[in-house]
Amino acid sequence: MSTPVSSIRNLGPASEQEFARAGIADAETLIALGPDQAYTKLLQSGAKPHFIGYYALVMGLQGRKWNDCQGEEKDRLRQRFDQIKASVQNPHSGIEHILNKIGVVEKRS
Image 1 (cartoon, rainbow, N blue to C red):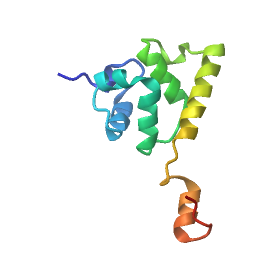
Image 2: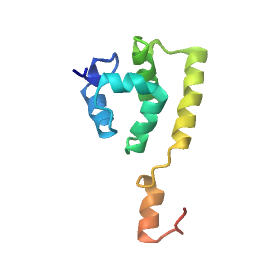
Image 3: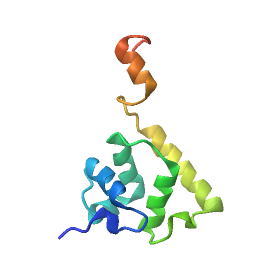
Image 4: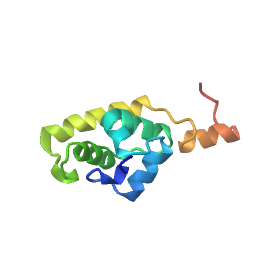
């Protein structure tokens, strides 16, 4: 029996749907992946990066309120978030994709 993603603190029905689109259908899978790998899969599925969503996930997996993250801990999470975001290149998002598609800018590999 699987547990809904929304059973994890700070994650509701909208998060559950986003994670399902990323192939993470239950809380057990999300917990096993951990926050960084799960968030990477989320971004790879086309979700827009959002720092608060990332640290709410991290806090939720620790059983903490989303706004419990402050100071140096929040700064460290920001660095992790920025690294994750930089590592995921979604070729189907953003203005560059649109401009490439219509031939306004040279296509990049």
